[in-house]
Amino acid sequence: MKNLKILLISLISTVILASCSLMPEFNTYVQIYDCVHGSIEVQLKEENDSGIEFYIILHPDEGYYLKNNKDLYIINHNENNKHNYASYSYKNNITWVIPKSTDDKNVYILKVDRESKLTITAFFTKIEQE
Image (cartoon, rainbow, N blue to C red; front, side, top):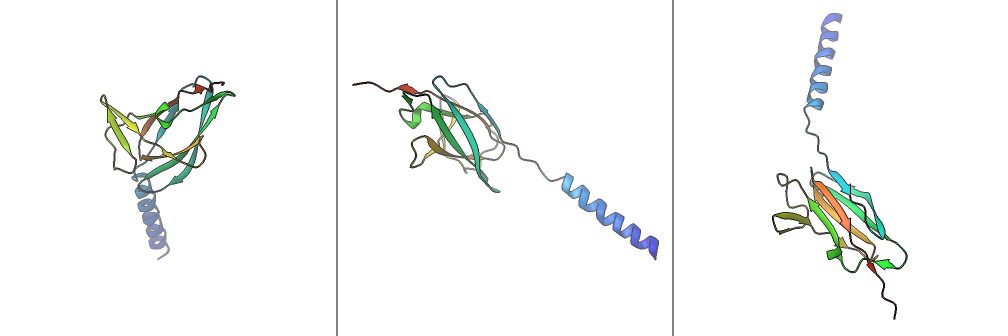
């Protein structure tokens, strides 16, 4: 009887461990290019089964700003995994991810699908003196 219990516990443990190792892993890669006249910070906001949300926080140098969100370039290089969690735009065979603005002009929310491979950069504009 004791051997049967040990065998049963071993069998259940093996099944649990094997099933955990067969679970798919989802990886999202974010690469931030050097920005001239500022920097970009990415923070995890929320993660769920559909996708991932990030805060994109812009840190322009003194005297510079992001003119509009079209100067924030976010490209998804993974064409195979899109489940419409994110907002996409397609131009010149490139998949652009469209961030959502917030009340803070230097903070955006970025929603991406699982297994996205992102490249982020921004072009900051000098503030014109009157």
